[in-house]
Length: 190
Length: 190
DNA sequence: TTGGATATAGACCGATCGGTCTACCTAACT
DNA sequence: AGTTAGGTAGACCGATCGGTCTATATCCAA
Image 1: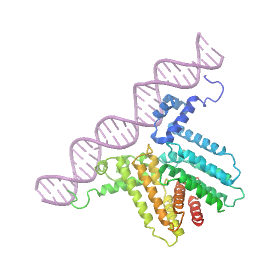
Image 2 (image 1 turned 90 degrees about the vertical axis):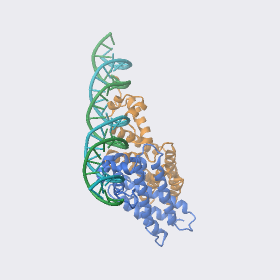
Image 3 (image 1 turned 90 degrees about the horizontal axis):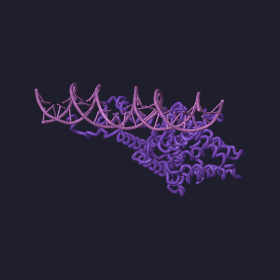
Image 4 (image 1 turned 180 degrees about the vertical axis):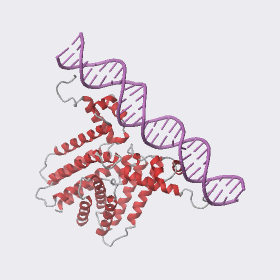
């Protein structure tokens, strides 16, 4: 066999497929990107996809699982600035930079969920889990003594969702400016 | 001819198609609902669709144009409660009720935009226009003397977007409660 | 060197899609 | 009564999709 040691799952083709599919799905949506396009862009044979994933749906799920891990890890790597306001600002910085990348279509996870035909299913569960973890992360960035921590965390998540969405849609001129100022006001008025 | 008076465009089949397609598109997305399903559900022949619209895309645009008109008219029909706070509350009531309808998948316009393969195009323009008009409507509900009207309007739109989205995703337990309280705080801290 | 697992290109399949065409029916106006 | 526009049912078309199969090439380990 080719590799005696190391997980056979960690093939180079598999990782290339995950990265390429992720990039294409982000820009056009899971349903609008075909198997042929993914494999060709990844420089991989179509059979390599089906040797690593049982179906396109399985590839899709793996793509967004990895993407969620990557995003949450990047957020944790922001560290812990000394003040609550700075910690929240850093989170807004992260998502503002992310939303500004050309080709972005709002939150990639919401995009994935809205591409599905049915509202339930593994992708929807994955996205719900990601958003809950994001909320936990925001909660952890708030001062522990704060009595309204939970509500403020919810509110900041809503502002993030709204800002990322409007950065794509364009109904609000500078959504991240508005969202940051709103968050600052909410933090101040404890 | 069948009808000498009245616009021939206002055919019964055309309106049935718009309503049926709107209902199906809302629940499953424009790309996940086929022409056959729309015409069968509308109780209309496939040719009736193509006698009233040049293509599925044209039907889709007409559906969301009518939907935007309907939503904005319903919001204007909320009237003008005496206080600013009550006017904003009424808007949140409207969207909370709308988001609670079974089968809803967040904002229907964002859903439509994210179903498209490409980020530009008529649907995206339509959605951007709708969101701008929504922002204008919120702006009009704020006290005229308020110096921070524009920013607060932006912020409330972000909260609405976030709440409608999370009502679908489920990452926040009671998104409209959090959004209302955030809006109240922002209004108070002028 | 050889055996065996992996990757490759590409033909192939059935299903579905948007869209067209045709033949027929119905019902209102002259 | 006859004309005619609009609606209907359904066969049909080309394109695309996800997925399978096969024959060939590659390369590591024994």
